[in-house]
Length: 470
Image (cartoon, rainbow, N blue to C red):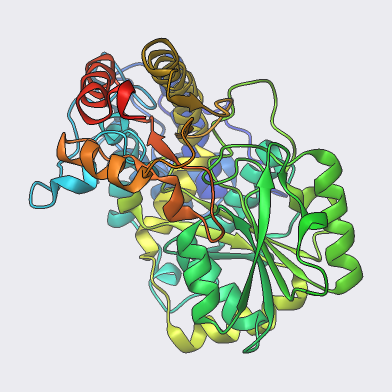
């Protein structure tokens, strides 16, 4: 292209972030092949004059592209498109496996629930975003900043969940945290008083129960069946201040709360002024048709605190999650965060904002949804074919866990889990997730269920629990 011609670059001055618009426009043309390796870009001074913006705005956009490897050249010389590597890029499989914690191998045992496939982590795309932001953070991002989190990330999250989960919110309602547990803990601390009743799913997420109890809640288990959490089945006479649910993909059973029950729950919460914590667990990976919209988007949003995380989508080591809280809770939330301090590094937040807006997150989810679906089906098929005499797979239309039940309701699922652990596999016993007595079973994480590992599970099941034992 002509060095000082930029007729293709039209800025939307009402949309803000002019630096980002320049970055995205140039990047898109490079990836499309409209600007080829070796082509010179307009000079920063010339492009700034053509666009009517400050030269520093163009410099910042170019520097971001240079940091990501799209541009070559040093200040004072012509800026040219770099030679880009061929082969997989962006959301494709990484060239190398992320390093494992060899000193604690049990954390990465096959079939452990709650762990995504770390071998599939999009190393190149994430590294590109992280490196660019670490090198070129703007000065106003380096101060104490907003207690609730970096504004571009909060905006990107709202756009993402509005598009994918029908969540209705303003970026001001988003708070950036290190984990789902941190989000539950924060919300519980600002909304509960000692002795307040909190309804929890049974079986359910043990960590959530522990956090609510630590905040002073009186836990009230509510049963979960094939239609999910049933507020009509709650013990009579208990009016909760807080209700903690995972309606889209219940942990650990994997069932989705029916629409009738979702509406009934929202109506109950509104009538009794109860706050719902919606843990949108594994909602990105739905395999059978379109998932139901998030609970938060079905009502006014005034009764629901919505929680999401990037740990299950990408990797727990990112330590990055978020909560979208009702407007009424914002003053208490912000005051509590300011007292306790932030916990997510600003360059990680900035990199995640770019990762979402540049399409890397959506591409990774699309790719992994197909892979995880195949692994879920393969794991369930092996169990149904080989071990259906004593083990029954449950819901498998979404998520990273397969819940199975033992036919013998007197069996010791904890002993079975320990035996499989001895063989290098790490499913969870369902009884560890329940308050009231529940039918025993095993919860298998399927994210890393390769054919070789499924075969190893088959062999281990044969050694640990022969049919005649039950």
